[in-house]
Length: 108
Image (cartoon, rainbow, N blue to C red; front, side, top):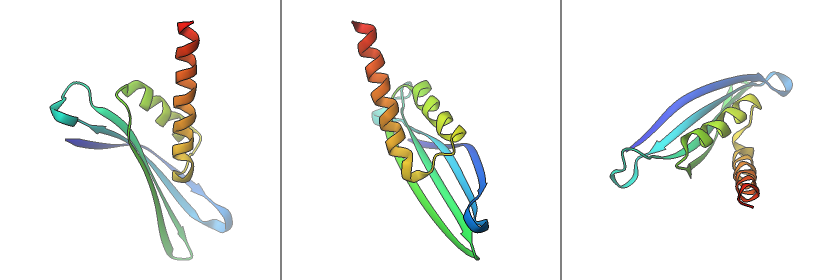
């Protein structure tokens, strides 16, 4: 079973008056009947309206980690910094790399 929860929305006025809405979703995927420990992910949807034309851009990372708190930390950082779909995967990669480096430093 998969679930998708809208966590937050940013509304921005872009270049030449474009109206931009960015929605941030927290994803859970209960795989193989696991009810206690879902795989967590993020989805970002960017909608832009300019001159009566609407465009949409979506990026999804459905399987980041089983650590819900870690994924929510990434998502909250993205919302604060108004990250768009085009940069989402790069930001996730940076978070995971930093997290792995911190874990290695703690081990020794």
